[in-house]
Amino acid sequence: MSQPARAAAGRAETRILNFIGGEFVAAKSGKTFENRSPVDGALIGRVAEAGEPEVDAAVQAARAALAGPWGQLDIARRSEMLYAVADEINRRFDDFLQAEVADTGKPASLASHLDIPRGAANFKIFADVVKNVPSEAFQMATPDGRGALNYAIRVPKGVIGVICPWNLPLLLMTWKVGPALACGNAVVVKPSEETPSTATLLGEVMNKVGVPKGVYNVVHGFGPDSAGEFLTRHRGVDAITFTGETRTGTAIMKAAAEGVRAVSFELGGKNAAVVFADCDFDAAIEGVGRAVFANCGQVCLGTERVYVERPIFERFVQALKAKAEGFKLGRPEDKDTTMGPLISEEHRRKVLSYYGKAVEDGAQVVTGGGVPDMPGELANGAWVQPTIWTGLPETSAVIREEIFGPCCHIAPFDAEDEAIRLANDTPYGLATTIWTTNLARAHRVAAKIDVGITWVNSWFLRDLRTPFGGSKESGIGREGGVHSLEFYTELRNVCIKL
Ligand code: NAD
Image 1 (tube, protein in one colour):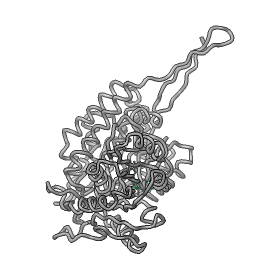
Image 2: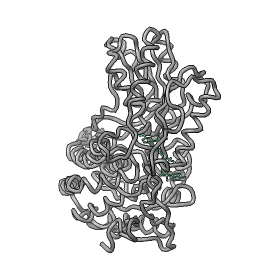
Image 3: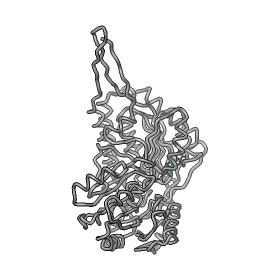
Image 4: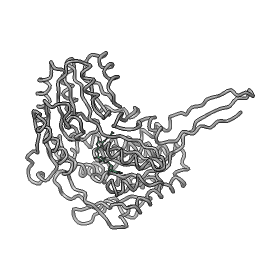
């Protein structure tokens, strides 16, 4: 290893480097970009921006790894290595936590029970899946009476380009890298420009546990005309897995069309909660409150549209308002902080533009709607108030478009069919939550909402063996458990004439 992932370059500043072929490297061009804290706008460090030469070197390193020792490892040995990766992340838990919290500004209490442990677990779960999944076999009759035997074998797809968002950086990245490596591929990861640190730190872990050079590579930069585009256009990349906005997915799909390369997409959402009058009221408030406000509303599976059956509408609005007003905004490391800032000033501008549109479109602002007064240096951070609206027409952009902030609109409904129609009236199809104590209704409604994931009386309860993904404009394909094998392996049929 030539340099550590985050080299000190001045008192408070760190340099975050690319990780290519097992080495931490700057860009040949010398280009860097700033990594700023969303909490107070302070400069965290400078990130080496990969150009085409670095992206090409990373792809070549990945190809070489496949042709070298990595390609020779059997599944048992590969799985042991991935277990070692998870253990080493857990051993360096505090380093990962500090890096993730610095980049995102999210409360340490959240990152320490979600982002980091799940980031580690993703390696173990897929190591287990790959070890235990059988393939299929068919005996067939032939005219000569001797028959034939067909069986399927799974082989790695090759070099996987992994393009990641900023909202759950380590968790969503390892959700792809875990299965990709478990299946025997090599990866080139392009983390979000907003959150470069934990992906880089993972390079140190890979070296420490002896993952061969070039199996895991990281290139930093932006999307168009930068590392993201260079990677997705690169013909040495065999398949691309992407989590991010639907619009970005469209651009990546065009790039992947050259060479007819496979894509797996986890995209945006505009998820509905449907709350029936027969729900467990307190559980619904708790669950919808988390779904709307967790991670400052920056969760793809989060809720931005809430439909509540009319008899409990007013009571629900008041209870969710109380919940929203109970959040404590503050520094991530403070124990009583329950909400952090948005990821960046740019994202805050976007969210505040919807706060403005809501008022223009005639919303009643139940709570929030603006920027909170934050003390001292925090005033330079990307803070917004948790916000609830009522009274908007369903045609408003605030109800149609993904905002990705701590906000929701609540509307009443009178009949089950109406609630289903409202929930489905969106180009997205990622997730929904249904709140009812009527079991028959729960099954009936769940089957009719066109999404990849439906929760009944809960939210974000994830069994990693289950299929994860979106319908309509929320994604292509499913990842999780055996479903990840569909994308990360090529299934070959072998037909033996007996
Ligand atoms: P984004 O689409 O702006 O960026 C995601 C990544 O794509 C970044 O690394 C970015 O640099 C890169 N990128 C941008 N343009 C590119 C291009 N032309 N070619 C190649 N790469 C490019 O998304 P974001 O703002 O980082 O994340 C928020 C979005 O992600 C929301 O829409 C959210 O719903 C979605 N999301 C979806 C899921 C899911 O599982 N469905 C999970 C988390 C986030």
